[in-house]
Length: 473
Image 1 (cartoon, rainbow, N blue to C red):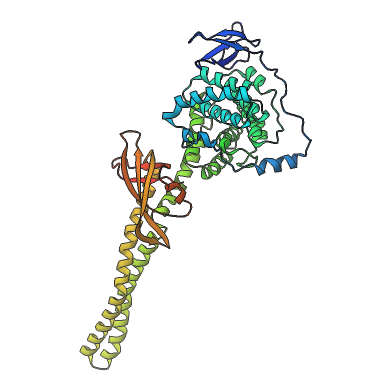
Image 2 (image 1 turned 90 degrees about the horizontal axis):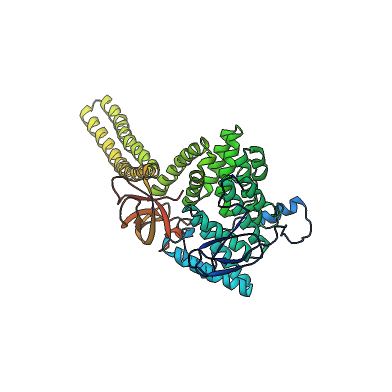
């Protein structure tokens, strides 16, 4: 490494956590007695484990069978162990639980090292993933490296080790240390039968290949279409961004936009935010410079239509134009019937009686049809206005988060679907938290999102913070 900038994720050294205080400590591959620079505690570090392939012997299977096994594991979101669920909010560490998570990590690491408990190992692995994401966003590479390598040397399952090595490889590639990235990923199994391990290898591999500008290699690993290759749910946003970037760089801009929009339509707000964070977090790669803005614009237009339907159930325009048609039709029908009655009577010589009779009949017909038309027009206008307002908010509203407090029925139904009034505590990016309400159709797929305590994505009117929209697409 002489004359070269040493990266945080170089394989030339080891970075582990101090057993006493949890601070990063550096040591050599040989290990030995290492003093912590923070608390002065002496750490006994063992020899670095051999960097040989750690996948256990397995019965060879065909590519088709492996593909079938991987697909059978797809569609399962990452679920925290029951004992750690309270640490998680909206798929990430709760901001108030970060310090507690570090404490639990140290405690669980000792438990795994002492008992080799599979249950404790799963808890340590999950804590590692959550802390890795948190520290990556905080750009705390020293502690992130230490946690990843400490877990790598503590956990024994091949699945755990492969995922951790791939995270280290991706982090090294991000710093431009492709030599270390290749060393981290070298012992990994590129033909794993476990979806999580296989996905981790694919994402690390394409990170390295993207850094090298090898777009064909990226598309070979990820496929050219969304869901062409089985990808674990938690990694879908990452794979989507790198796939689209490779397509765009290879000259297929429309293919890149199509692939991104396909993934955006399947992801929640947090998933789409993750895609954006991946792009913003790797400026050196300039990911999806044209395709992502185009895909976002197209998805927003589709989401605006969905938002308008969520506000009026799709009946606003139907009622409005039907009401206008009934109103105008009632007038014309009344005039037509009146004329048809009056003209024969007038031609028979009784012009006054004919005119009065025609006017009376025309008025009766008009009065019986026009009120229905007027009511339909008014109702349609109100619902249509709500739909237009919801569509505008989805496009122009300020993104925010909210915590559901509860909801209650309004007594109104649209096409058999009840309208409910939802109370939410809004976490606005530009002002203090506050409580607001909004009305929404309680569809079957929306009900789970309205459970009290659920964190949801919102759009807030720029001038009126009380005017909010639940971002469901």
